[in-house]
Image (tube, rainbow, N blue to C red):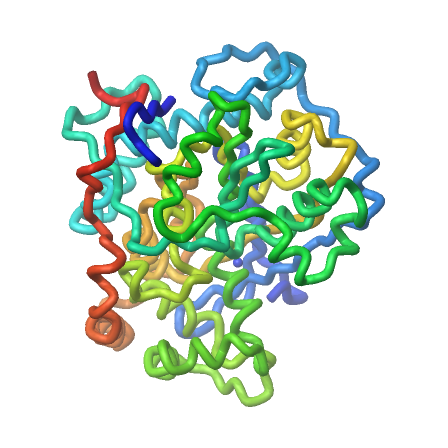
Length: 426
């Protein structure tokens, strides 16, 4: 529990080689592995499964079990939902988030650690019996301007949520807009304008004051919707890198020089401007959010999980079950539904390590692990020229976007923010 006493605050081919089932904290990822290329790239396909409108009548039956209520979720969850496996999972994620926030300074500094040190520290956080380091609390400072498009609330149905880009946020918006419109339209019937403009949003600057009166103690359900960072990367690529997509007019001048450096494939007859491996090289070389596009900046940047109170961390990979739980907890399951379902993806050994190094927050704060992706990724030879190219890319991106560094305040603690974490070392 956090208490804010003074805060305002990845081509399925004919020869399917292997299926890796990644399971941790009920986050199940089906990874389809094939087409191992000569340059050490592993290409993995993705297809969204769209759930039809009739799905709203197909209600979930949750797995019942006797669950200990640790008191970390402050929203008044109905008793019949508490004795379920899903509630147990939500409690685990909440405890992971609180434990992570209590040692946020160590996580922010983890770029200076070895890969093994980062993994071991994350495992320590996941072990609720392990004593965390006793250190001065640090609430990661927010950027001067927050991402307004991700933060939504409604005072009638009492919810306060963060829906970061490429986590299935549009589907959540569909469901919530349909709810707010009192069922005037089903989620599938809403047009783009309604989806993106018909929910109240917190202001870009200083949303803490407005959030302070919309927490669990005020009867609001607070939630952040997240997705495995690798899967989220693939989603950003599949959406924004299509030829003719308007967003390429923004991507090209900012990142084209790096993408061209790593492009090894003839993309003339492909449907994307650049290959997925080239995009992953860009993502791995971008060490800070100010060097990234808003669609692949960290979920931590978008939502500020140590600044803002979130009782529920919803893993998009768990799809309909967790979505249904949230709607039932709000007592609106008969009034709307959340369409859509998603899977996941990755690439090569060194990229896995570098990407994890660049965004440890998203793995640690939201309870995702890297182990199975890391195990199946392809090792690259030490003398591969790509290593030098990667060094160049990191330096080039740092120089290009340096002017934005001060506004993002990455790796800084907010000294004005006073917060107490239940799992903090005493």
